[in-house]
Length: 245
Image (cartoon, rainbow, N blue to C red; front, side, top):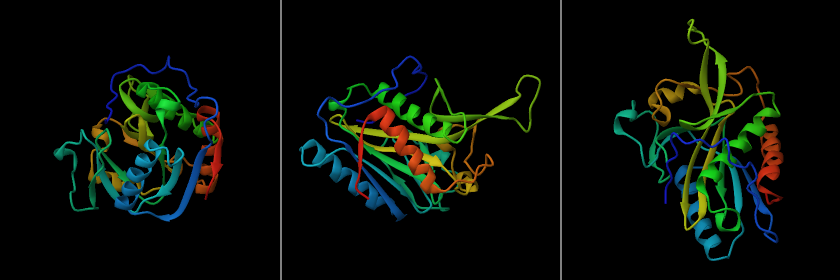
């Protein structure tokens, strides 16, 4: 099952999404070299099947991809503006087109929601809160919006008017698929990617907001430091982890 979440208030949902008592720690895996998208997709699909068969534990996998575009189940052909700029892959997740590439931290989330809460809206909200808490460690105020999924940063607009002093740019995207209540795909966080590479698509089908990154906000940050902050925030919301890297 893929999941589309639009025009839905998530502010009232609890931040905690921890597992039932006795659940093993979530495996925390980090891959430092670039991972091709088909390889990552195969890995996630196999892992989900093993979790369903109770032959594997839950896992978060942190990685980077080479430059590419992925199309979610709601992607519109017209939103692929430059079809031959980078490889394009059908992702099978919810959402529309997005860009992945070096300088972007991908976190693939393979969790058994039956051990936590069978509520996908609450799961999405918890993922957003995870990113918001991570950003706060770098003094970045991330925000969620009712009408669009992801985490946003409000900025003074370069083209401000009397009615619009601020713009909103996305710093983290979320695209999830759930199979028999086990999640896969996940989140992407812009650390220092080439933001010009987004020009080949309409990111997530949204035309009236932009994208940003840590570097774009004037905060050059090492990926290792991002990973530490992600780990700390994850444990606050989802529970204990065990590092298998």
